[in-house]
Image 1 (tube, helix red, strand yellow):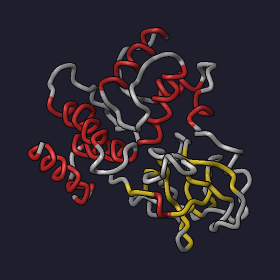
Image 2 (cartoon, helix red, strand yellow; image 1 turned 90 degrees about the vertical axis):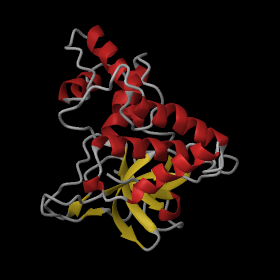
Image 3 (tube, rainbow, N blue to C red; image 1 turned 180 degrees about the horizontal axis):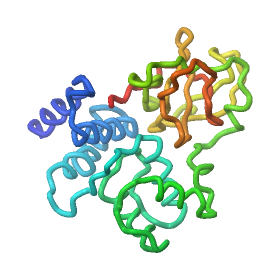
Image 4 (tube, rainbow, N blue to C red; image 1 turned 30 degrees about the vertical axis):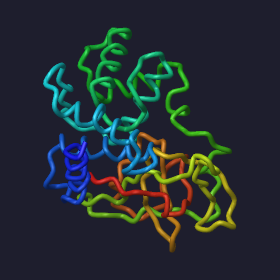
Length: 255
């Protein structure tokens, strides 16, 4: 157990390595560890160590049934959309954690086989389009329990500041640390402060993209596979799912 703890500590420490110095495999492992942390009570929670061992470390160490290599790695938000859409259609992609692993690849192959598509097992434009046109709830179901359409009802606009097309204009984060015995959700508000209206809810493990910040409040978008964080023009965020959340409950995702 001490060796496992030391190994996990080294893995978590790797999150401080700059993203450009990491391989795709290392970044996937890093995201997997974050997802386990977000869905547990912390580093001392046995459920966290079990999750890392079964879903992250075991995935890295086994050579059986390799994960299909994607020509263009999908972003976390797209993976979440695919996972939740597959689950809604009855294909088991494993936990909806934004990590592309063996179970997700197997579910994609099963979906492709059922639709008469080439069974690549990867997330590409064809798979995303097929899921969107499947007639199931699809993208709308990727939204967590909520109270309304966040992006259409803001009191303070969230701004995406234009870049040069090279550096990302937003950063991905995961919601973590919410007390399941308390409210159990992170309120999404119409403006940067507790006095603004609550328009939605997020939960531990939900992935968001942070575009704007005012004090302790961060303007985020989420549950939208079209987010690309690459605008060269300063403009209001283009998403139906957006709002302001307190930064205390956000942990940065590298990559």
